[in-house]
Image 1 (cartoon, rainbow, N blue to C red):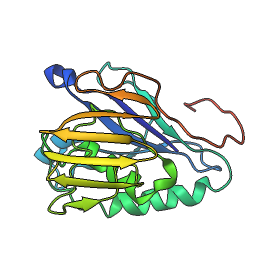
Image 2 (image 1 turned 180 degrees about the vertical axis):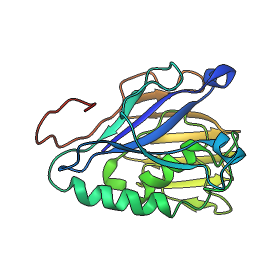
Image 3 (image 1 turned 90 degrees about the vertical axis):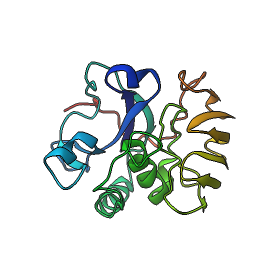
Image 4 (image 1 turned 30 degrees about the horizontal axis):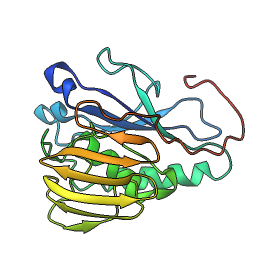
Length: 204
């Protein structure tokens, strides 16, 4: 299981990233990618896309960054839970760039459903703090806690994210991966916990 993000297309890329979740069962020949793509709602009744493609492909020219990875024993069960959570995503028929729900809301939904992934999304993952009408949830990683007012104002704390403050979807924080800032994303290396049973190329 790998979680990626890349700067979005056009001027929006100055502020935010598009994120996705890629999985490959141990006996599978191809990777499956789960993501939400807003413009699909122009001709489809869902923004949720589940398809086979390279996990680390560029997003409209932007190079992806790896945010989380899990390999080896037990990964197939995590993949089954990811698939179930993706198909139960409650905002598949709606998309709002700011403050959400959007592609980062979806990735955070998966991360909350499968906290073993320990996904640490950057400050540029605008929409990760959107939890609908609820005020309290776990942090986007599925650990710790979060207080959020429709993704516009809030605070989150966990052993994965550290401490984060959200002001109008601009995210400021400090944690194991470094300092998180709007526009920049983070100063430091992504925290990527993994139990690697065997190395293999990212793309088949």
